[in-house]
Length: 314
Image 1: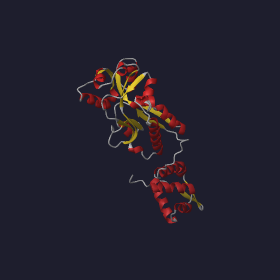
Image 2: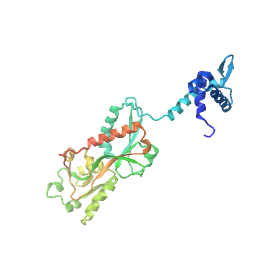
Image 3: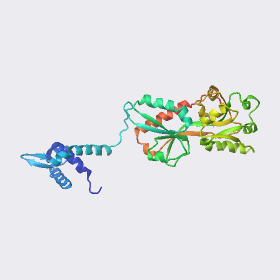
Image 4: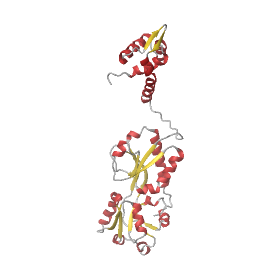
C-alpha cells in the first residue's frame, strides 16, 4: 500500500463533516496551511475538487456527497482496527459460536456440564461439538475448531495446552463376572479373558500391552470398537473385559458409578502409567477475551467434575 495514506482518509472524513478547512484543522490539531495542503493532496488522490467555494464558505461536490457516508464508515473501521484490543467482555450480550472437538466419552459425560456452565453465563453463545477423529492440528490452526479436548502432549509444537485432569486406565467387567467374583485378579487371569479394545485409545492401551508383555503375557482381543462407551456397552452384556480411562465412568467414585451402569470396575493387575487430559488451542486465539473466558470455563468445569476426594475408590 505504498500509494495509500490512511491519514488522508481521516482528514477527508473530518473535512466532509466540518465543511471548513479552519474547523477541520482545529479538530485535527493542525495549522490551517497544513490542512489546506492536505485538501490539495486529497483532490489529487480522488481526482475531484471535493470542497468548492460558494461565497464565504465551502460546499461539497456531488462526488464528496456520495463519498461522505462511505468515508466515515471506513475511517471508523480503520480506527477500530488500529486501536488496542479491549479486554472488556459482556457475557450477557456475547453472541458467538464456539466449536469444541472431543471424544465420544467426553461428549457423553461432560458436554452437558460444559454446556450449562457456558450458556448459563452467556445465554446467546452457541456450542458446536465436533466428533474427534485422529489427532490433526489443522482445524485448530485454521480456526475451524476453537478448543480441542484430548491427551496432553499429543499436539503440534505451537499448540497451547492447559491441564484439565489426570487420568488412568482401569479394568471393567459386567457385574457378577467370575473374574471379580472369585480369587485375586492376577495378571495371568486377567490376560486369559477375552478383551474388548477401543481403537481410539490405542495410544494408552499400548502401555497396558507392554506391561503384560514384560510378564510374557498378551491380551486376546476378541472385539475392537471405535471408542470406550462402545466397549462398556459390550462388556455389560458379555463375559468380555475391557480397559478404559477412569474418567469414562463420570466421577471420582468410580465403583459406585460402575454399579449404576451394571458394571464392576477394578484396578489393573499390572502397573500402567497414568496420563493427562488437556484443553488445546492455537495461539492466535490468545488475545481474544471471549476465547479466554471459554477456556477458563471449560477448565474449571472439568477440574470440578474430576476432583478426587480422599474417599475416591476404584
